[in-house]
Amino acid sequence: MIILCDVDNVLNQLNRTWVDTHNKDCATCEKHLNYDDITAWNLAQFVECGDAIYNHLSSSSLYLNTPAMEHAQEVTAR
Image 1: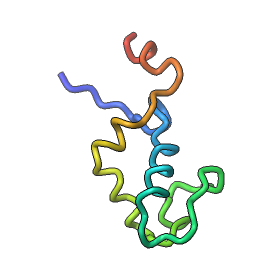
Image 2: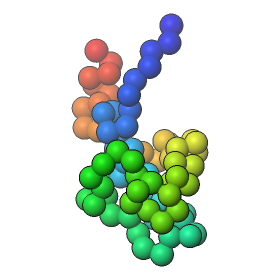
Image 3: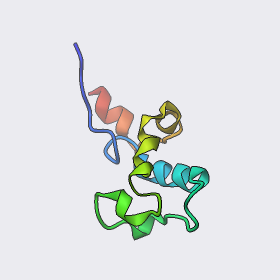
Image 4: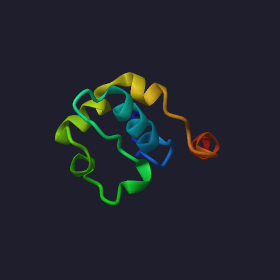
């Protein structure tokens, strides 16, 4: 059996970790992305590197370093 879950900001704090990772790794961006400035789903519009921000999503380390939301494990176990 395979169970799929929408994890970004449902079960974990992916967006905060993604923004932090982007700010550390983006060599072409002169200014950092501020999580509180994100007001739309398309993150590419908020960064100088555009669609390259989505490259982080293919890195397993991004997900391994993302903390779970409070109570996510307990709710998922039900």
